[in-house]
Length: 255
Image (cartoon, rainbow, N blue to C red; front, side):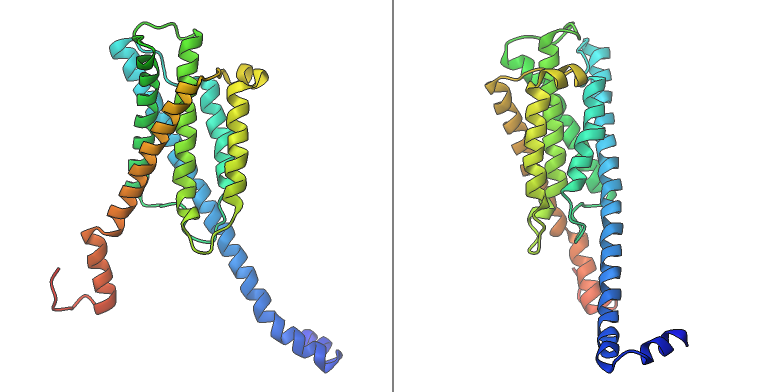
């Protein structure tokens, strides 16, 4: 009653404008709330995937230390850097407009274990490129520190691919992922080569051949991601579900 009395005191043009703009404002508020909620879901899923990746790398490092006396593939400083520096940077690159992150449990586990496996294999290949066996290596040596840095960089780039690959392929995409990618390269360069950050996170400088190994490892994961997404879109279960949605569960056709 009070609102209607207030509106009646205004000119007719203002009343019409308020009545027209109110649904648009409500729609915009609901759209913003939906994007914020979707962004929160994506952030939670990325945090879970990151935790699984770091847990798997730590587990592989423990198994390698127990069976072959190979030093762990990541230091504590590197794990904290991925969790509290790299993960928020990735979340910043999501727009929240669409399903940027695949939230299916089997897909999340497959990508997390693949990233962890690729990172640990890159760690082992670091020693192989130099013709050195990693067994009984000194965990505090610069060589082990370089290998751990390489494994961490591979993990970070693979997580970036996992988070932003679907964002890039959307027709109406946000350009925040470009800012995220540029900021990510700056962060990587500083973590690897800046003396203060090297002391803070325990990282070491990498050589050109190491970056080639990083590029090879991330490319391998990128191909795995593309093939897994293609297989998921063309799986029999997905086709059956689509058929039931279009023709109903009582369709006489069999697939």
